[in-house]
Length: 159
Image (cartoon, rainbow, N blue to C red; front, side, top):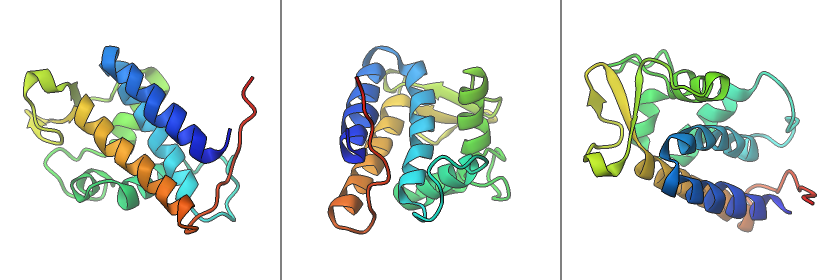
């Protein structure tokens, strides 16, 4: 499976399927997927499997592939209402304990909240909106590969 096929099948299709019935689980998968997208677009001289680059890769993907509203929550040094950093509060929380940290609230569209809005002292992420932005980021990486801006950096042998 090529990198492009993986992005389409796993990141877009399979996470999209999970989103339909398991909104909570989709947040952790999307957060991990964001880090992978950052790895796809970073300098090819960096090893794909180098350790200690998670934060840099996640932030790179947010900066280059997500709507500008996300940038406000992409660095602890940025001043925002919650001092909320998506990498620390969402990605690290979900990947290390399967729970977001204290400055993130997770919701879904049926509750009529706006993505990246506030609920008290928490940043709200709306599952469906977050996934749409992630899917768009995935498609941007595919387009960069198709346009020759970046090269595919991995392939998988899935049995």
